[in-house]
Image (cartoon, rainbow over all chains, first blue to last red; front, side, top):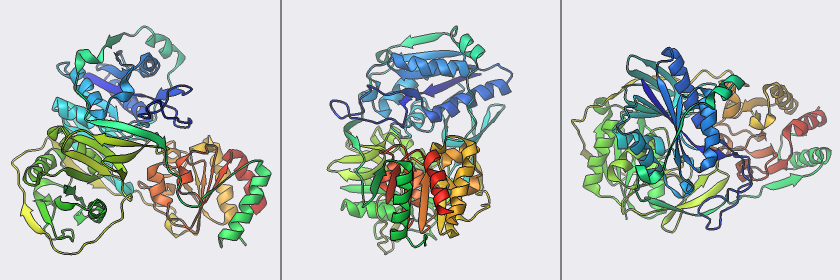
Length: 258
Length: 302
């Protein structure tokens, strides 16, 4: 069995974001990067499947981006992926979902993957498009938003998260692509021996142009802070003073404190 | 401008999101047809054309077949814009249709800016405008972003069918887990978010809830991490609440969370990050570490 996991490196979402020079996206300086949270669930689920099948499947982890993404590739290798593909693209932030999906599909095509795991979306773009677009380009069946995954004899049983806590159970045959939702599993922390072992694992490098030269279908402008609405007040300062202020406000504006 | 709206049908019922789609169409002043895999007994109230396929034949979740049916409607209508709700149905089906049409896809639109679409990014902290470069465009709109509009009237129904056989088999729905607390009835809800740092700090928020005489809630990450039972989860995949007072402790305010609590009477948020999206709905945002602030407030209240 041959498994592909697609991961993205994203900034820490607690960061203070500023627009880049053209306001197409954020300025990368002073940002700390990490693995997209949704993708951690994807890596973990792939590794669990490998363990379930007695270590037989080979897991390839793929990431697109500048050299900094090697950090998350190494984390995925330390979590249990076997080999990696780094699609070296310093210009990744200017690519839209269609282009990213086209690159992934071009890499996966002809490489006999049985299962592809992706996050349901990235934390920074949040468009929830790339996984399904790549599946469509490959002609793979796909299901999104997994909070449950089981595999036996070429059949995936997927539990999708719907609205209001309801779930939907779906079955599909491999080859297939699934996108992972938060809470699917509890992603492991890489252990020191596994971090050491990961250093010996192969990272193959490709240029995006070798795989796809699809033009974008969308452009991005006016990256900015969200507009603050309403009459909310922001208070800062010493904790004791803040507590006093909050009590006064609650007494004045709500009927819940006497 | 011609729109094709994609309605939703689940567990034998038309979802009321079709009124939001009509609201979006009216916001941009466009003619709209609707596509639905549903039932002729339960159609949306509007006066346009409804392209209807039978959910008993084609299933409620059957993306490959729904895609084929929707492509037939697209062929007949030749719309400028195909509009989904950004929901588990919409974000699943929209990319399939966009890929077949090789149309630009814009996800979770919250507003319009001329010919561009405004969308959130970076966990809803930031916004950007997305400009499509194809003539036909597929979008999903954020649930709740456009006011619902019930036009009234009866659509003229055109029935769709396909021979397409699916490789995806829908097995069953699993009902939501029973709630051990009914947060919807509480007058005060105090919720814990990831900002509390660790599981042990749940007790600190529980004490604050008690001091207020309210119920304890939580955000999704706190529930996913196992710090709190799912029965306490506030948000679009948990409970929707509208108490007189909502206290958000270390909750950044994802769209899913905001959808579940933004109708609260008064919202007090405590967060270290001044830019956190919870600030968009908070009446008061206290910029502080909740681990320090919550015990101090509890002490003052008791």
